Amino acid sequence: MTLRYIHAADLHLDSPFTGIRAAAPENVAQTLYSATFDSYRNIIDLCISERVDALLVAGDIYDGADRSLRAQQAFIDGLRSLDAAGIRSFVCHGNHDPLDGWEARLAYPDGCHRFGSEFAAVPIFPDEPERALVYGISYPTRDVYDNLVSQLGEVDESAFTIGLLHANVGGNTDHALYAPCTLDDLAQSGIDYWALGHVHTRQVLRERTPTVVYPGNPQGRHPNETGARGVYLVEVDDTGNVGLEFRPTDTVRWERINIDISALETEQDLLNEIDDAMQNLLDGAEGRSVVVRMTLTGRGEVNQFLRQAGAAEQLLASINDQWAERLPFVWCERIEDETAAAIDRDALRSGEDFLAEVLRTADQIREDPETLQDGLAELYQHRRFRQHLANLTEAEIAALLDEAEALAVNLLAEDDR
Image (tube, rainbow, N blue to C red):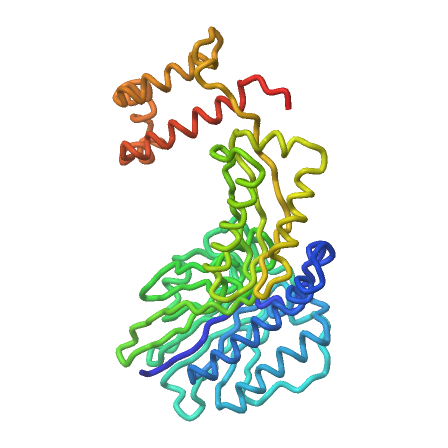
């Protein structure tokens, strides 16, 4: 193997978890307080256990430009551990940790290279510069709206080259348009592997020539950052082929779940269903604790309980009494109630109003699915919609019909809620 390295980004050390920690019990709050630091320690331990050649960090090491002393000490201590193990580190700075932010006068280890505000090329192996080079650039200040790739210049084609960059590729609307560039810009750069940061959801934008990767953030920080979070272990063979392996490094996992009350008859049924869901979350978290946001959906008898004043709060307290004190824990940070009262479908269908006609039409379609295609003929021919409709299976069409009926009932049925 020619080269092995860890590609990380968006550590956001000392992320405050504002508001969430304040509502959490002490053990949960403490876990969240330490989560970004523990995740970073996991990255350092992974580098050492895998005996990689280097760690690459693609920006947003800290959560803000005025990064805390605690965060800076933790970050540098990790790099010192790598240096002691003979592992080099390469760091660029992004919009959350620009070069003009406050910085304590702490000594970085000799094996760490931090990139400045202009692209520079640094060998991973100082004694063998022809093996691999890292081209990196940092944000001089928070608001960088220039295409930094255009500043790269000529790339050494004799070595395996890595571009270390914090940027928004392709105009991702979920993140600010800092250092915007296109995938084509990266493809034409001459770089073999683009180690990107900024987008918190991991994704491989391009697998080969060049390989373009966002590892995502190594620790989720709120309910929109669900699922496993971590880094990529990258292996480059003698021919320059790149192998990618995602490695989770998070210590607490965020999840969203829906609980459908339609088939539940009693409060005990609801509690049992929630207990099963909590256990499933723990089983799927690989030994990690979980913070979950729960949405209750559907029409059913349990809605009578949920309509009582303070019912959602009582349910939340009951869940957390059962699950939040465990280790690992599941802490439900919020319950969103989107349920409605049970209905008598047969009675609604026999009516004379618009909803009755909708239900009768739905039944006709179930009996003869071809009538749906006839009714949606214009959509099947529409240039935007036909690509989504053309390949639907009968089961998928049936599921869509069920969803449409449920939506119609929720919007049109009389409900004294």
